[in-house]
Amino acid sequence: MSLLQQNAKLLAVSRPVSFAAGERLVRQGEPTRGAFIIGAGVVEAQVAMPGGGMLTVAELRDGDIFGEMALIERGICSATVTARAEVRGWFVEREDFRALVASRDPAALELSRALTQVLAAKLRVLNAKVREHPAAEDRPARKAPAVDFSSAKEPSFEWRPFLPLLRFFEGFEPADIDAVAAIGRALELPRDAWLFGSGQAAETCFLVIRGAVEVVAAHGAMERRVAVAGPGELVGYLAALERTQHAASARLREKACLLELPASALAKLYEGKDSVSVKLQHAIHASLLRSLARTNNLLTRLISHARLSARPASLDLETALHGQLWRPAGSEEAR
Image (cartoon, rainbow, N blue to C red; front, top):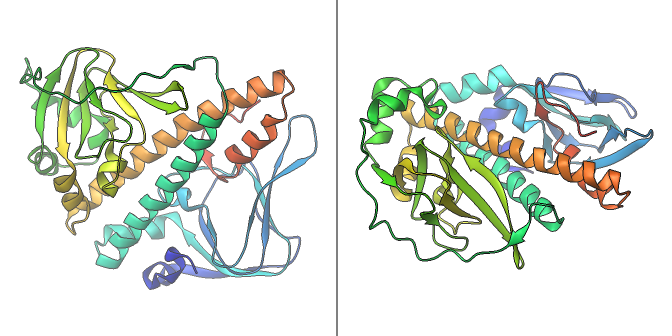
């Protein structure tokens, strides 16, 4: 059984469901409503291909869960999921899940943190898949030097009034923002300054207040820019929360003002039980979904290039993209 299935709090807000062999659980293109937990049975996820035919992108069975991203944000089903044999399980509505977390029950908060781990695992798998395939923007990898903040200065402007304007703090009360800011320090760094390198221990992460940070991932002797994080984006937070090493490198694309957040203090706040912790978890989930959206955009581009060149890699990439069974509302399918 999955961690989510074992959680009695989650099952308390779910309803039992059953499907006969051949019956659809969700249809490609329809709005997502929540998550399915499979108690017994097998389901198959398929996506309609542009040239005709269907591609199987996932097979799920006892203990698996799908639609978990729909618990934190509305979206569109990226595949049709059909029961291959009789299926019994549970369905969790998004609004019921959100109310459960908002109650600040310790078990519910633990469940929310488990969802962070699920999303983070998906992101790591997808990023690894993207790096396996060459892209036109690949360039020789540069090794990150030892991080040196000796050139860091205090910001040359009054930075605190900018915090409520950042999307990371959407839904935060002024006191909540103050609680997050209190654990960090504001830095102003020059263009090309490194924040961290791949493989370095994640002792801190950074919230961009002004400027932009380039995130670069290496694969063998080559590297590729995977994101440009602007104001309101949190950089390096997954490794900081998980107390692991950074999987990518980050350097300043332009002069920037950053809020440096120590990993230990951020984790303590994130793992707390008050309203600040709940809002921080929501903010982390939103950051993860934006990261997933960026990775999906990269996958879409690789799929388009593979189709144009008739490379067999396109099916592998299609499976990775649609196997998530969720995409943001309003996004376009790869064409």
